[in-house]
Image 1 (tube, rainbow, N blue to C red):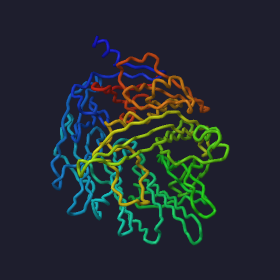
Image 2 (spheres, rainbow, N blue to C red):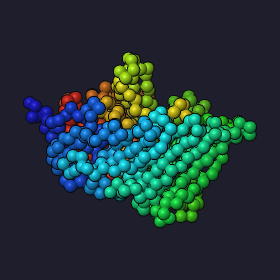
Image 3 (cartoon, rainbow, N blue to C red):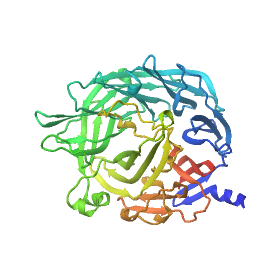
Length: 538
């Protein structure tokens, strides 16, 4: 009987999606939180069990576990590093961890190379040693991989409240963990108490050019005007990474967020939400629509800037018919999930409703516990033409919730209720994955000019596409996989798995590695059973 169940759980199909799993992971007390990639015929992953980290190495073809090694990095400044990421760069595997030096008031970031069998080597390097003011203002690190998967772009951001200064430092790291470029910037706000400063996005292209999107918003109370500074900071490798600033000018609007796509043709595309501004200079903060910009880095010209209001049909799905008819705007509860480049030169922006609700802590001192609830609901899908206009928009209906209790929240260390934000990397901390949020959200797949979005859903939502009729997915242990498929005109078709088995594994959409447009390495589990697998698109 158990053999039959294991065989069934190893294969799943729904619509064009096929999933094949490997063997059950024997050492399954550790939960995989990050799949680094595949190299040398092996798959490498980072796993956690309570506060301990492990490197898991799988044979690539059979997806069978070969090695399971606990990470025990030597103490640095009398502290063991907090592991931030694992990555495969040009076939070499690295683990990255941070340590705050309380005595020297320095935020450090270290990298250590992992051997082919998953053990720590002696090849360890310090990547960051950034001076801060105190532990409360130590800031946080944000890490991105280059499109060639041979570089790391790392940003550290912190706020010094007493000095009234915001600081950020960015470095480009090669596959030897050598620093190729670095830049540190301090932004004073002593004369602008209500300044809102956001590092909206950062990226690196195939040419090793670095880009940072900065958004400053400041209301002048005397003149009752809103001063918006929306800039692209460019560091070209051909120009020895000298900083260049490109202003993107507009009036009577405020940028809410930004997602950037840095191409290798000298063009940078930027999209996101915007809000309107009242006559007294105050921004409404609610979402008016989607903007699209194209910047020519070589000429520093803004070739394109268009603001597109949400259409009525989209607002009905998000707000309801009554509020849509009154012209109400959309609440600013949607974050950029992903940005997809279309085969016709346009873009598809996916923006997901997300809330993280933190309850009151109970207990005393270090033994206090905090309840946290993650909510990930509908996704706004906006297809943007190459000229910046909206081709079509639609809304993926879903309601997902996961709750857990933690000893620490793991949010970035910014002092007070500051207006300094890094929306460039709104992601779930590694330490939180494995507690439930990894079952939420979605996986976008773009292949042969078609968009598919895969996510977990309540089995009672079988065939349902009406957002008003969607039921909550509260118990992710009973979730079933769903795919939403879009045609060229934005029409959405729901595909449910027909042959659902009682004991089949459940996908974790926040833990995967994209190998090609058609193939993804995934992680699935059900209670005590877990496996890695391959998801392919026909």
